Length: 266
Image (cartoon, rainbow, N blue to C red):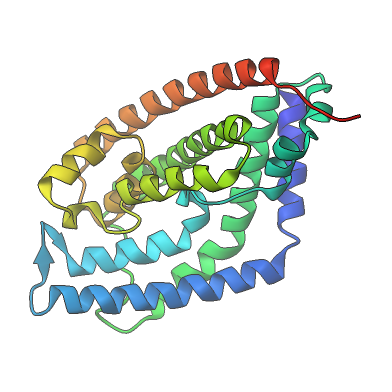
């Protein structure tokens, strides 16, 4: 375990050096958040609620989504890892006396943590400073905030577990282009494109049985109070279930594909 913790620390500190990229991402996320709250204001019109989801809660949902985008965004590629697979550089990784799955998992986790650490606080601050009704609200209660923090962290673990399956699929496709479709579909069912409460009931039921919804929709709606304590605790159990399943499946598939991989060249 010690090598993986050391790798997480080193990669996290290395990621903090990319301040220019963080600044660019920060400005993009802030203006994207402004655009979304105005679009949804037009959608709500004179109504204060739609699908049991008030405009006030939706605005907070949008700002949280933008602040923690690095934690919940599926489409976050590591070009170095993809190049290892497609060029044969993976052979060097396989020679090391560590688990390839765990090493890559730590790399993806540290990248998201470092990116999110530099961006979330400024976006949150700007969200609170926006004029009413476009401003972010405080959490419903201290309990809601605590459950939000727990589910957000579990959601991050779940997102990385899903991302690992996407990377592993490149061993077969030899191109990340096809794997992008998994992320696009996943982000839709996670409520990243349209908040799940605004979706038709049939699509909402599909979201409930897939792992994507538990990455972002659950923590953000807990923060707003749209999801109560009992449902939040159930959600934590579901998150834990999906994490256990996807980690096990990912490790098994990684072991199999690396054993059957053939690296050509010399």
